Image 1 (cartoon, rainbow, N blue to C red):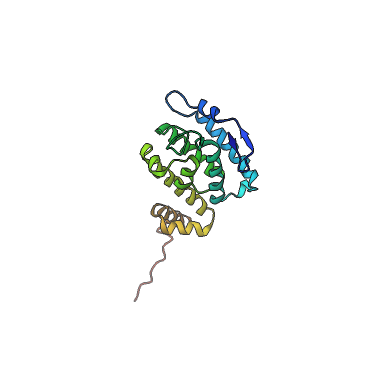
Image 2: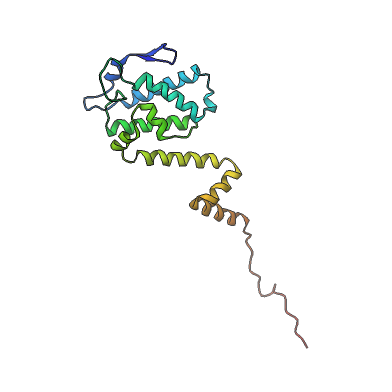
Length: 197
């Protein structure tokens, strides 16, 4: 049963989750995306968070509640897994994409730590199925940081000093902005140099 942090029922039951997994063990991505987004919006209200000013810590707290509501196995089932979805590349990649959408929607820094807590799958297992999961999250972290730094002039200078490709672009643009185009003088415009006698 999906519950909020106060124990109130939110939606469906565990059978609804199991029905959204096909015969190959792949999750219904649309169902999970909608369920996760609905729960996050409800938890933001429950926790009195401002959706426009979410912090990474707020998102982490909300993701833990989503884990408890959707991914945590029923305590009456004997399992050694910490997530009730089948572990496979399709499922983990789909959930990474959903998580990245959520992190950027709420302007929060994506991390393997928070993603792992959202779905209940440890980092090593995630990397066993999606070998570039860590680099995907790292690239998105970098993109997030660069976007945030580009919002201020100090951030732009920081990027220019620390990121070679951005520094080169910044310097090139600075040179272009400050360069003045000067026309060559014609022969008639040249000042004659006085001759000594």
